[in-house]
Image: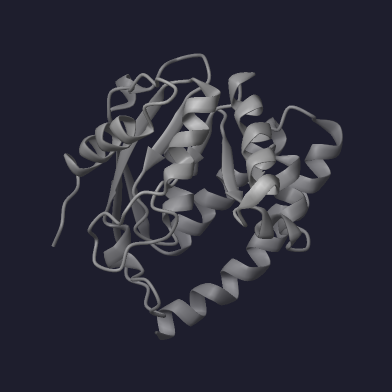
Length: 231
């Protein structure tokens, strides 16, 4: 617990500093690359300060060009940093709309080209999903956690159908990934922080067919589970 508290004393001002840099960089760069570069620096510093190593496997499965949707499991808070460094190409996060309202941090997310998604349901949510699908189809690669939240025990949670509806609308391949090690480093709902290794393994791209969300969901789930290490 003491280690986690000391880490937070570093992390909070460091996050503010990187967010400010992303906002300023975004004023001169509309492509999102400046914001993404700041996110990578933020991630590298955050992992290094926590004494967390990163291992990346399966990079040969990541297409060298064209938009894709990266989908994988969500084990802990450090997944964000690990993926920001593991994905070898420029990408955007699809995140809940509420995060974009956080002062400075939300502005940094917008400058980096991240995509807000309304999860309240109804027409507003559908409109939000269509806008996100258009962004992806026009060339933006994104990362989505189909579970929607972090796991408590390391097992895969039920997937949210919305992620696969979005994939069907966008019509771009899904690259599955599996994260291991993150939960042991920082368990959900616990103020604990342990040094360790997070591994990210990419799987072969999965083609998307509109209207076959159920089948697609099962394919992605099997691909993620195949590389999952459960205690």
